[in-house]
Every structure is written in C-alpha cells, then in structure tokens.
Image 1 (cartoon, one colour):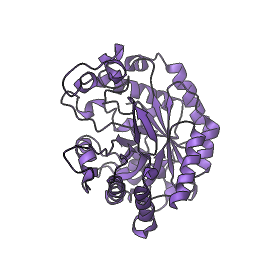
Image 2 (image 1 turned 90 degrees about the horizontal axis):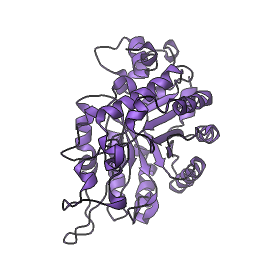
Image 3 (image 1 turned 120 degrees about the horizontal axis):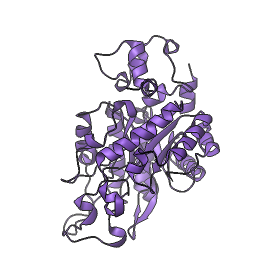
Image 4 (image 1 turned 30 degrees about the vertical axis):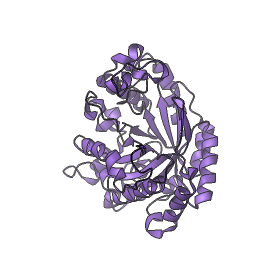
Length: 381
C-alpha cells in the first residue's frame, strides 16, 4: 500500500485522529465529524480541507446540464429563483483530454456550487489508460486542478457497467434487441464496437487506480472521487464489486438511474408509484452494501414528463432526506434527444411537477434537510 495514496484518504485521516477503527469508516456517520471536540485538532487534507464536503450535515441538491459550465450555472441559478431554492451541486460533462476550466469552475465555487465533472474517455481503451498511454494528459489536468485549489467532485468513466459508452461493458443488451435480433448502426452499444468489446471490469479498475495515483502523486488533495455505476440489470453483466477500485480510491458512490414510465397501451397512462425510488435503486443499494460503506449520492437521475413525474420528484426528495446512507441527488435537468427520440427530463417540463418541487422546499420539514453553501461550510471554522 502506497503512503501517498492513503494520506489523501479523508476517511482514514479521521479514523486515525478520532481513534475509530472498530466502527468502520467514520465518514459513514454524519455525526462522525462531531466526535472530535475541535475540528482544528484534526490534520487537514492539504491543500484545501474537503472533509466536511464528503459528508455534510445537509443533503446536496444538484442539477446537471449540457453545454458550457457557465451556461449550466446560469440555468441552475434561474431555476433556483423559479422554485425559491438555491442548489449547491452543478454537474457538467466533458471528454477526457479537455483542459480544466479554472475560471468557470472558480465562478461555480464562488457562486455556491460544488463543481462536479463527469469525465468521458471517448478515445482510447481502458487498457491503454491503465498502461500509461495518456499520462501526459492526466498530469496536465491534475496540475490545473491542483493550481485551482478549489474542491472538485470528479467521476471518470461513469456508468462503466452499461453497454452504451465505449468504456463500458458489452452485455447482450448492447448488441441485441428485445427480440434477440442484432442491433446495427447508432443503436449498437458503443461498448460492443471495436476494441471496446474486449473491456473487462479489471481494465476499468486498473485505469481508475492509475489515474487516481497520478493525481495523488502530484499532491492533488482537493478532489472528491466519485465512482458512478448505473442501475443496469443484465444476467451477463459481472457483479458491481468487480468494477470497484476499492475504498481507498473512492470517496462517493455516485449511482445513476432514471424513473422512466413505460407506457403500456393496455394500461392507464398514469400510475402513481410511491415505491419508485426503491424499484429503481433498491437492488443497486443492496449490492453496494455487500462490499462498501462509502456514502451514496444519486449522481444522475430524472423522470419522464408524464403525470407521474411530480410524484417521482417528491419520492426522491423524501427518500434522500430519510435515508442515512444518502447525501443528496443530481437531477438531469435537460431535454435530451437520443437515438432519434426526445425525452424531457426537466423538472419544469410540466407545471404540476414544477409546483410539486417548489411546494416541497417551501415546507420547513424538507427544506431544512437540503442545501448549504459549500464554500461557506469549509471556511466556517
């Protein structure tokens, strides 16, 4: 075990400082940070102390947007004004190899958002990442993040257990239709094309660890590492544990799943489902608990624009507030076109869903459980 790696693990620092070894990872207990009578007695993570952000007292309230970071922030701010509730986590997407945008991320941080980036390795195989073919790009990005000296939630190769990205796993679902016929063209899962079809779970693990170690060796201590599996269920997909880099390489488990309503022409168009969160995420949560106790955030979710949407929103918010193992969610607040089909995931896609969202956060019971200024949290000692 390399000292450089373990020194960057906030949970381990707390365990040593608080003498909590028998109870497991203290970051699992939101009161864990309160066990120490004086926070300043603990050794901070250099250069910026992100421990309070790894598991804050209140839940994160996040939004995800496409396009530029700035446009996403502006849309998030306008939406916050519309519902009367400020959000504090802004997720954006970028291809691996892009330059870390210090100015836009700094603005996000100054405006009360924790920046959260999904880095997508569209080019190159996982094995090439693990074997060091992209080390120059990794070091350049890591250096920029270090110089920025602001907290960053960072996820590499999200939804790695799905078939739709080139870094994913090629399951039967990726190359067959429901009738068992072969998919062709843009509908073919990208993990089932070219060299990507040979991706193995251990390739993802090796790539993640290699990238992580470069960051750590360069002294980058301001990153929250987010491992982000999808709720995909296929008999031939390996267990999630095989894709997991290990607790010393991960700070958050960032699950991804959608509350889509399948319209059966023989069934009512609308059916309220108060167990939707458990139906979508329950099996994944249970599987995660078999090999890790790291905190969970729903890193990407949404609901189709039907009458059920308002109740999906309500159930997600209440589940996050009630579950001790969840630290919030990120709503994919975008109207997206994929495979020639448009889906409107936006909360304000329907007046009733917007009203539900606004009303929930007008209720002190739920409002008090979400939202805080990340910058203020780590600066208030």
